[in-house]
Length: 98
Image (cartoon, rainbow, N blue to C red):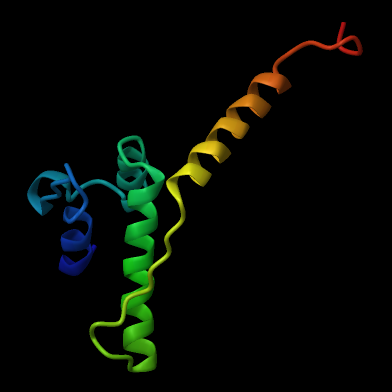
């Protein structure tokens, strides 16, 4: 991982990466472990920041260019609720299963 990558990951709340402590871990193992502590909103923010910086460098956009994506939190809460209901319903026995 480059110093810039470590810096970007250290910008996530409650994350502190150090080459001396964490240098022997594979990146996919590290991301898997971090995924247990991160919610979707933080991951989306990091993805948007990475995409913004890539587009800025590839297309020569101004340095203050940022991609933003916002969605009403209520929509996310409703989608999570529907997902849970669907998961619970899929675990129920119906007449065909009996």
